[in-house]
Image (cartoon, rainbow, N blue to C red):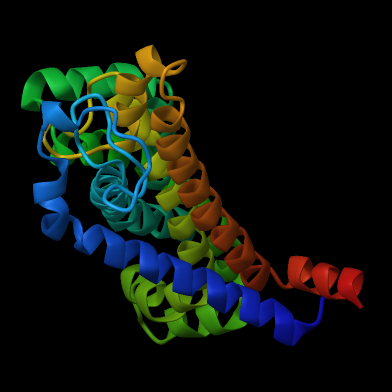
Length: 277
């Protein structure tokens, strides 16, 4: 694959992400279409209902579009929490090997030791269900992911001559990390952000499926799957459509994250260029 074609494909991926965000923003406009209408239950695909209606008479297409908002909101909140806390911790731990850096890495391992679902149940019992609760539960497990990733990317840079020169000039580790290190590892951070967005969408669907995610009447792909499982024989589209929406969204974000990782790692990029030559 040529470099120009590769860039066009990546640009197309970004365009699809923008379309996804626009659909999420359109959720309030679709509110009247996912109100319960028992008289319209299980209507087939038609000009009036492009994807039919569910067992409550709600327009399936409107529910899918509304589910974009829940998925994107929870995933974005989780990424903001994870990146906002994890990136500074990773940079701080990478600056030097001391008690503070070892404590940060040990804290990451401690967070990883708890099952995500158990933590989600705990947060649910304290704060109740909703977008904020789901975003917080997923975001807590994003913190060590970003911290470990940025630690691995930034640690080798602290031995470079220009970093030693910055230290000799009297700059603090915080200033060096913000001005010199962070720009060099930003591509790694963006790649991880894209991947965690995809995983956040999947996690939100899982939490909503078990009743720990967003609450009705806000649509959720995970809850749509839960509600459709008893109708899989009568109306399989009610499970297939949200399932495809989840799969396509997760694939899109993780695929974009993988492509960004290629640009972040020169060795991987050179390997891909050699393979496509």
